[in-house]
Length: 416
Ligand code: AMP
Ligand code: GLY
Image 1 (spheres, rainbow, N blue to C red):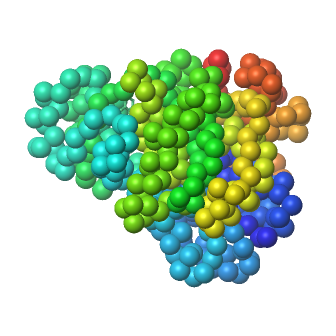
Image 2 (image 1 turned 90 degrees about the horizontal axis):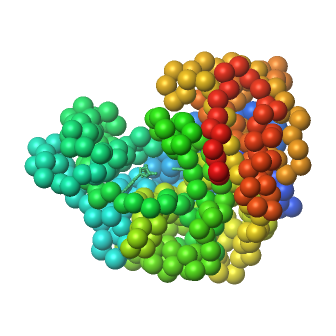
């Protein structure tokens, strides 16, 4: 098969890396890709949201299977468009992807189908939200309805912060039309985990779980980022919790989406807080997580192509989808200054000097005269497997320290 992967981050490099070990795969194309995906297959200089160009590239290159990485491509309906042209593509339709692209849609669905989640109110104007913000108990969480590159959620400790967050989203429109509607949600307390399943709209594969780190600094200090590291599995994750999350959250959600006329096919991601009252959903995503993918896919023992094909063909119940017992830890290396201003163009050294069971996934990199060079804020995810999280963690950091580029920065407490 010729496979096209849409996206260009470390998540997509991890998908491409895993696909390359499948005996079913001949050629892999990535659009737009990065220096890491270019080492495995062919990069196509097409943006992940340029549906028409992606479609024509898929036809020209005789692509048998397309896999969608980022939510932005799902939001513009890449799956619907490819299917309309008779192409095989893994991922949810635009309507099913609303579970991620509209927090109002997701919240209404969860309320209607009794899926455990925080209480929330939906507002369509700043004036309407104000009285609520003035009387609500703090802390409170303000969420822009639409996609906002991970920046649309503000956990507000004080009333002033809540009012400012509402103003930013609804009056200042810092997230554009994504802030036309805003959810004000009860703050939940507990450990946060990310769980993933392949689903064909009816059946779900056994869950796999990970934890991610969003803040730039050690001890969760400083501003939010696109993700600074992750590990899998979480220490709290066991069969009982997996069963509970499956029966109370993931399976009912897949059933609910089908009942609403938009069956979900692809990878469904539940963002969950383990509260005193049990697991509750803080968000759903319609795709793999970044950086969770980088620590989850190295644990996949079965053929990734089979999982994707099963999600398309209604055969997830018959597919072999197996996760290893091993642990995996991923440390994200970023450009100094990120998530604010940073410089690019630094040559990266040490990538050829990695230990066994260590894989480096590229994000903001490009090859300049064959030399990998930084080209973005998040540069690499260095992942290591081990018999325990402690072993994987030690191995990951040993190898992070072998990689050098000017102003490299990373957290030292991933999986600690
Ligand atoms: P999201 O963009 O939905 O992933 O939210 C970003 C982060 O905000 C999450 O990873 C949580 O840490 C936090 N968050 C979102 N919703 C809640 C909530 N209801 N209670 C507490 N924290 C939340
Ligand atoms: N790890 C958070 C996300 O992928 O949205």
